[in-house]
Amino acid sequence: MPDTPATIDETPTLQPGVSRSGRIDLLDALRGLALVAMAIYHFTWDLEFFGYVAAGTAGSGGWRLFARLIASSFLFLAGYSLVLGHSPKFRGRAFLRRFAKIAGAAALISIATWFALPQSFIFFGILHAIAAASLVGILFLRLPAPVSFLAAAAAFAAPLYLRSPLFDAPALWWVGLSETIPRSNDYVPLLPWLAPFLLGLGTAKLLHPIFAAWARPAQTDRDRKLWIKPLAFGGRHSLAIYLIHQPLLIGLVYAFSLVVPAPLPDAAATYRLNCEQACNRQESAITCSTFCGCTLDRLKEQKLFEDLNQGKIDLSSDERIARIATQCTMEAQSGD
Image (cartoon, rainbow, N blue to C red; front, side):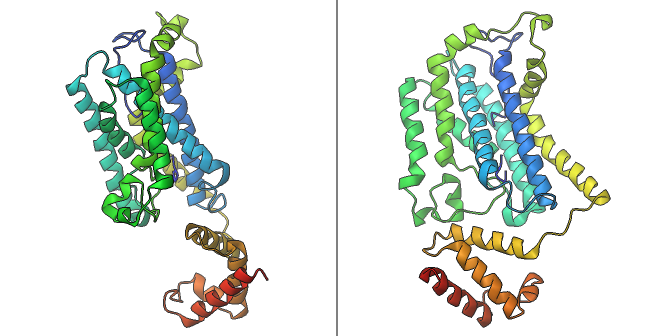
């Protein structure tokens, strides 16, 4: 997610309205709903990967916002669940067991994506963020809810004010304060993503007794709402579903592509999209759409576009490309 894009854990069972034999179905259902949303987003990413939707779809516009809302909901529920599992007493063994499962799953995803997509592997995705945020969350379990809310606000604002080249070292990318955004298919650094986790933690401390009384689990299956049951089932097995769903989805799209291949992408449109994305990441003073349109026209005029697409031209050393880039930069700056 990309993207893309998790309270990937079982709901703890020590608060009012929660017991070993009766969970809060609504909490499980909310987690299940987040899983459904995540699967929809990942399916869109898979369609883009195989060329069935336009390049850049999953990482832009409403889809980008959708992915951020999904990640926020997972982290919020993870913070909420941490309070449920460790009140009134912190259970160290249970915490370590849960942490080991999430951290182990995160490591598995890093290893798998390193081999599958080495240029954009997931080195700190949603599971990594949940594991790291859980360690930080321990410090807030005995503090008043307002402290968690203030810390959440600080975590959210930190990347806006504290970015520094000091964090550009790959070993510090997980913090989220680097000036250069690393390339990854699922990048969820601790800052600002600690914010929704702490918000969930504070909300649980403040409101859970009220919520638990309102959402007390039904005593029999007959009493449970039909729409909640399947979502709650998914929420209770969220880690397993998280690990399984994407390989399954991408396998289905791949199988479909063998029968109905995706249409070939328009080379010029793909060039412009990639050019504008790279230009925008650099936050340059030029108008990226003008610059990229200019370079595309010049490449076609000089009959270089096809060779560039086929990898026959070295962008870093070819003087013709450098000359075109310089000319188009001047044109974009002048506004002509």
